[in-house]
Length: 402
Ligand SMILES: *Cc1c(COP(=O)(O)O)cnc(C)c1O
Ligand SMILES: [Zn+2]
Image (cartoon, rainbow, N blue to C red; front, side, top):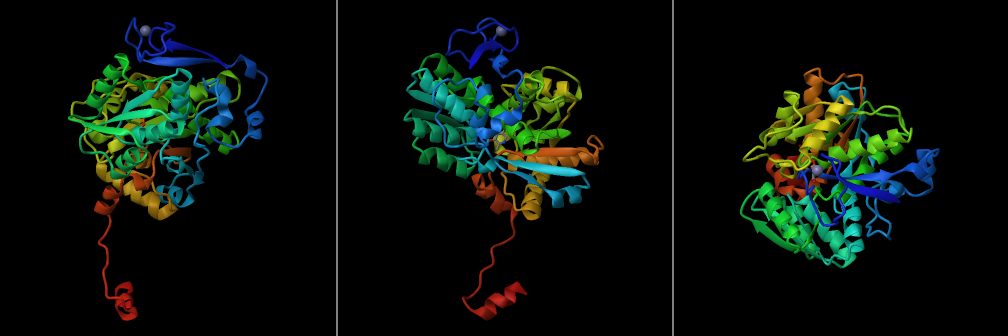
């Protein structure tokens, strides 16, 4: 397993293991894997191992024994009832809520925390809208590392907060939003107080590549036409692009599915740029949405995400909070699949793009549903009907059953 850390913008090779941006141009970092030893092989060759993140370890920049909670290997559901309702040829949902801490963040964290151990770090930290902190706290516990997480004040879903505290992280809420928390963590990391495991750490997206690998694996390497991601800080959709390009470079796939990104209307800086064909974006000052996991105004991997979408012929769109909640409940009722609001943005975006004629009804589509419904019970309760109370008698209960 050989690799180089490079600046994604100017290509400079980065030797210092503790940088989170390029010292020359301040660009984001990326990892270039040497895959030459895989030439002449096929993805089927990996199937001797159980499905999950570490089935794909040739594509992961870790040489030591990983810190793992057996992440990945999540279900890919064939959602026939929802496809019928949307009048779409085929819809699969990749249910990332089935990961150890209930979101796809575990895929990046197994790699990131393994890297922290390789580097001999003692304290790991992150800024988070919730799921990154829940995941990091769990992997830090498994690795025996100290963990510090910075959250925006308020607006963190209860389940995520409970997880981070439960796993023993030092949980700090800062007076500001996610973008403010990230700025402070970067400063702490540069001062040497902690090893930062936000997705600007290039080891994180490497683990997240496996989400895309698994989708292709589970479809027996028959490519879908499109994969739709909810987009917040934008590393996940970028990781998918990187994954697909690596398989393409090995001749394991011919084409790339159209990568499609969905943001919430109240925090949609990338959608605005996409609409104008721009490669860069203007941050949104006060991002707002019920989908707190994507409530991010200044996506750290925003430029990478735009490239991923442009290069694969995908699109970006924004959806309202109402559309998000409707999609969340539709998936629950139709499929028995419970996802958190941000995750449902992918379904809401699909519906909108179908209605607008930007996605053909003849496509085979995969929606990535990033986190579990139990992450945010308050939003569920706020959108459900009333709880029914009765006396403890058969007559009383029959009366309300009707
Ligand atoms: C982190 C997260 C996202 C956004 O992923 P990015 O890589 O930041 O774009 C979406 N949904 C959920 C549930 C998340 O936890
Ligand atoms: Zn650079």
